[in-house]
Length: 349
Ligand code: NAI
Ligand code: MG
Image (cartoon, rainbow, N blue to C red; front, side, top):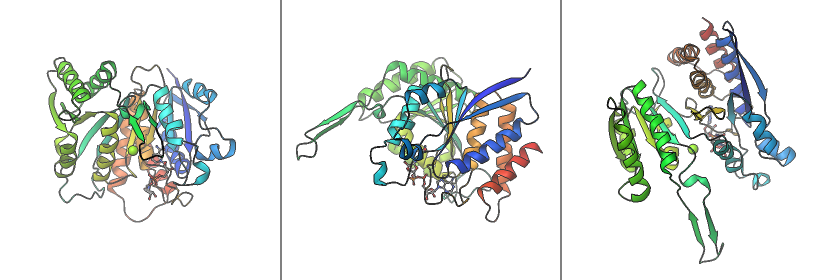
């Protein structure tokens, strides 16, 4: 039975189009002989589009994107500090808007130290964990304001929003994931200080844990978690945490597993009411854009997450294996396209 997947493709700015070209190359290679077809629609969004038209993300863009089955995004954003982009608000107006409007309540960020990948830790052990970061609540919702701006008496509030509904659904996702992995879940928060939000997170984790007796539950304060991510990262399997802590921890996680060129992520709406979005964790890297120096591996691993999300688990595993083999045999400098070609060739082999 043939299947058509409608894929919205947002290459974006800087190295975004370069790495997306390789990700699409690998996607096409892994599905070449199968009965699933990806029907791709490109969307021009990002700093480049804003400079041309003044638009960040229109309602028409949003509804057109929402009509797809999934989204593949490269990276968006211009040169940091570019005065022409002062009002563009790419982070809030585009990336966060997509995540909030499409109800991407799971931000999934796997961290694995692949054999052959160079990480900064002398004795890393086996690093293979997934951070499940809440994506629609916390301090990132824009529930705040300021008064007396620019005066010595300025007041600025940024309220962290945590709902029982929002926490329970992401916690449930994390438990189900732990059950499919190594049966260990670590809640990371700061319950000793953030007693209201932290207390609710803790109670919900304890309640949901009753339904998953096979999963071991652990808790760490976020500051302690940063220590263990460096001194003993192999202790982690699934980490569940809020939007802000997850943002910070996943950058650290990316660093200990060999860097930004390898870190993939999914912004997931598990209910399927909206398309989920898959993207490398890195940004548009204006410093190397157009030079073919970007590592497309993170974008290619994002395709593996996309395939897995769509239930194409065999195709997903083939992409991951091809990447693993490629990383293990890396030596010398290759261009972005050469890395993409090598991985595309391996998925077909
Ligand atoms: P960045 O991730 O773009 O770059 C940080 C450093 O890592 C740079 O030196 C860059 O050359 C290097 N780098 C990044 N990706 C790489 C890759 N695939 N291969 C090799 N080297 C790589 O972060 P930065 O410089 O803070 O932001 C640049 C722009 O990207 C900004 O406009 C920022 O807002 C945007 N950005 C967008 C994101 C997204 O689209 N999700 C995420 C982070 C930043
Ligand atoms: Mg970040």
